[in-house]
Image (tube, rainbow, N blue to C red; front, top):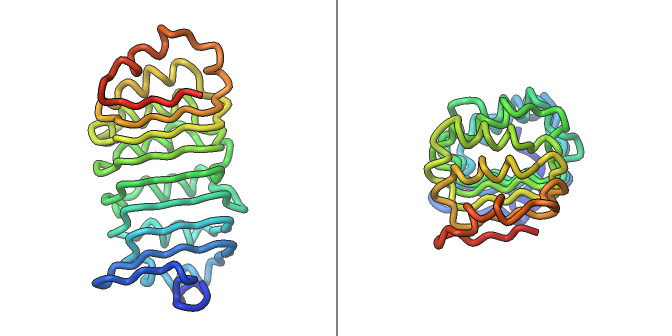
Length: 212
């Protein structure tokens, strides 16, 4: 029932320590039968990295049952996650221990701001990396910043190559009072920003900003 990840059980990238398991999968394509049968095998994962993978609905549901997951990376998904899949993954009660989320070019364009706002309910979230996702907008960041506990803990935020992110998003980011590192890269609508728009963030002595 476990994914076929090659020699060593975790494709050579697994780490077992006291029963806590890290897993990296690349080029893997899930199917509903395998994910349904293998759900028990996902529960104890602490970190999961999915690179160039395609994950079916049942696979998303299986990841959403990882009670001990602290880090989730989804990079360059061959089939982008739909709004419903993102809601299943992040909107449940299981992933309450998540500290780090990295989403690189893996979200469908029509994932709504309301769905992304569920990220803000993750009370342990410390690092959030959003790159190459058109659905990351000012409204999405506003929802994350106002929907829960993440605003109190988030220390690292990276937003890159998001066409619908404008200066209004900077005001949303200012709500994350615990930020110590902020990366905003190649966000087209920020190119004409004035110093007034960024001064509130750049004036923080404990915050390192990279606005490119």
